[in-house]
Image 1 (tube, each protein chain N blue to C red):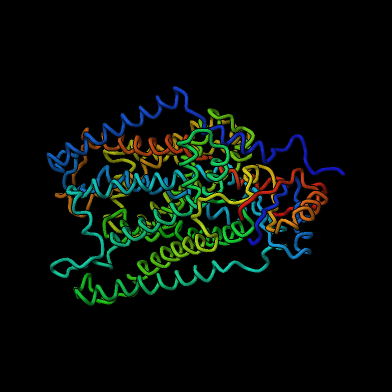
Image 2: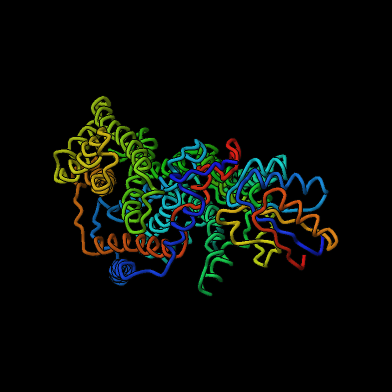
Length: 449
Length: 170
């Protein structure tokens, strides 16, 4: 009888071989990368320590710009975190096959980016040891947090997002860790994977409940994709600061988050693919699909930028009009035009199909977009605060080395987690890639999943 | 699974695996099927119907919704302070808290349901389990008594098993 195998198709065994090879003892390059990340973390830690010892004044904040680099970084990292859940949950519900090879990386990025974003409200507090004041608990004066404040909504939204994203990520990892356990060579790895795979065997009952639960996780995570960045946008939109008080903010922030997150996935996936020879798993078609997503979200973001200007003009509100004159022509205009170039102009190259599959071009473009999305948050936060209602209260922001050090530290913190993750756990989803391959069968027509 | 022996058949193809399962079902023996990926054919043959995880998920979601609103309302009543001319119990403002708690507890309950119904964590050795089942092979493990071993081995081999082995200690 003819089997349903084909020599050109990726096989189950090849998927295991390729992905689990990534877990073999690291080379010098990996250690160099880890040390670089740790050095950046050290810079960030030293900067934060300095700030704690000397006060928030050292951070470059000055009235009226009291939300400066830290909140810019917070929104940037929440945005990066956003697209992981989009790729893992929303595209799962839509059965988009291109997600299979990149979703694990996107989920890891989500969890680590939320862990990074979560640092910034603490750093921004000045006295981080009082962070628990945001938790709903009765203190000695029976004061409760204000549940009508978007800042508290943010605490609930980001905490929920971290919990659900981490759960979704870990549950997805369990069958793949079991595969790693079954091939582990060292005692350390054997123990690590035995414990973390929870004794998973892939029995018929295991899979039955697993697939049901996974669907529910995806169904829960999908509204989170919309809600988290909407809530973050309400931190701004529910105030009356010119440039912030706009109903367009939630969809604008959500689209921007997907835009930056997909760009970051590309930034991470390209070196990983090259370093571990994953070309047959993360294919040019995957990059083509992600490029289309970038192109679509770039269009939405560009439209949102234009709408902000139109609404400022149409509202005939002096303060709004001035704010949107200040952004392109004021003293921080370089940030505005940089944002326009990075987020609106540069992605247009993706209309050309050959560019969507050109790995070098995509890598550079993904870095440009990440810079552009950081500048977008800079423009929204710092430019709006710099030009409030009363000219006598106007001001400027002077970046200090503390701001820069902590920003570098955040990238090191994120990179450190990613570097450790790719060497200890399967960074490409074994099970889900196998699911889109033909099931080995003697006769065709078997084995739909 | 009952029986003092575990007879394991290792299969390369899904159609051989389902054939073996049907034979074992006809013998009215207890069995487990292992596969590297979830498969509807195996699922429909061995555990038809819907997973009860959904009830746990629903319970968690409703609990979260009630908890979120109750937390915000009771805390506001405990410390009544008007802010921005909003009511003390300002339901639209509390929708976000209720919404997030619905998702949070729904997700946590789903995880607990998954662990419960999958009977994990359980890191101890499973009789008949073969590391190839997480790679590219399917497995049918049948629990039986010593006098049934030969018949089961023959059934698995005839169904197309690449390898049949007998394990002790069920």
